[in-house]
Length: 284
Image 1 (spheres, rainbow, N blue to C red):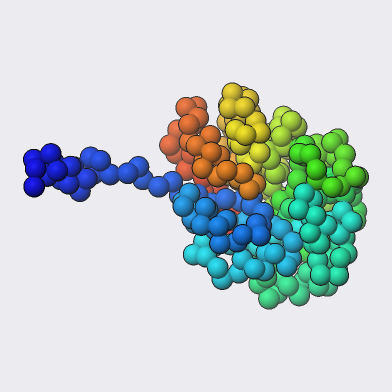
Image 2 (image 1 turned 45 degrees about the vertical axis):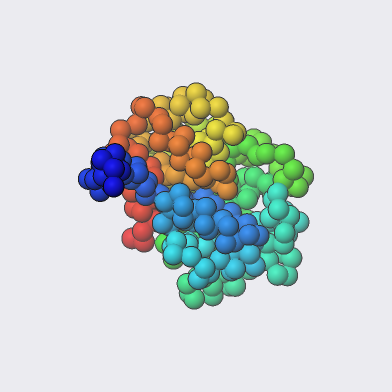
């Protein structure tokens, strides 16, 4: 055995050349894929140990028992024309836009629903504070389940003709937060272009968090713009309320986008990658 080979072996076992420690990740925003095995493999390879999944009822049921990742199952509603935006698959077996509260409550009791989300009010053409949603918020509050609401913009081809950009403003959450003050709510996409409004709501309401999906995806938002948004959240004192989300983007790129932000300390990165989400999703 050559001296060089001996050195390499010793260096590896001493940690000098060992690979970088894998980042621990709780992804609070994923959607289903028809190739369940490939999606789960990608998440596992990226260090994801827990994930919040929202998609059609049929598709999400195919994820159950398939992975060592702890999956939290969300209830997507209301569905425009009964379909999931973009994939356009039926949300529910009967093709309805809204699942019945009685059906939902029975599924909560059997442990099949862990949270409400993605709430698609913006795609449906109504405000997140529309009274049509109140029976669902009431159930979430009753069983202490988190609620994730789509906020901000949307990509092309979502198939929801009633979608209105102005309905993605987090300021529209004020009415429902006044009616359901104990609701655990997270603003998806950090509010996107409405991030200043998201910051204002998060500063005012202790139970409101945000995920960084979309705004942390370099294939959608340029890195420098993401840095500006993150600096605004951090300067506003919200480092304990930001959660990692990939939204089915290239998770390696999204993780790298957060990891490479020099304005974040290692402690802040740990909060964003998993610690804040663990606290938010934990039942009180």
